[in-house]
Image (cartoon, rainbow, N blue to C red; front, side, top):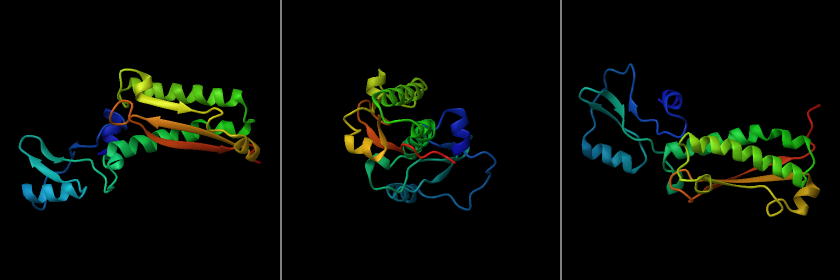
Length: 176
């Protein structure tokens, strides 16, 4: 289901809908059973006349409301992994203002692409995400340790309400 929805609508879309090739369930849950399971974060299947067996919800088991929706978790994981991979080149440079500007620029370009695809809500890019990679989050101590920090905030559900994460590279870790 996740792979199909990723291909059809993107990683930001909830993986719900018809299960292709599934023709029968052992038993249909009652409405009360579905509500009870849903309250615990369990995603249920349901037969819908004319539409087949469908996945009804896309929740996680997290009790943290920021992480309750599977699409939120998957989008943040995708963005973090993409940015870790996409800025790996920074580990081979010196932590300077120029490096941090390049990291901001490449990260902003990637995130604008997600925003344009509809993965991040907001009328503007500023409502959809924030990128910080400057002297405010890269202290002298970080520079002395050979570390560069990139802080990212994504509006994954509502504009200007950010879920944040940090991508960190240790400078000078060259591959032999």
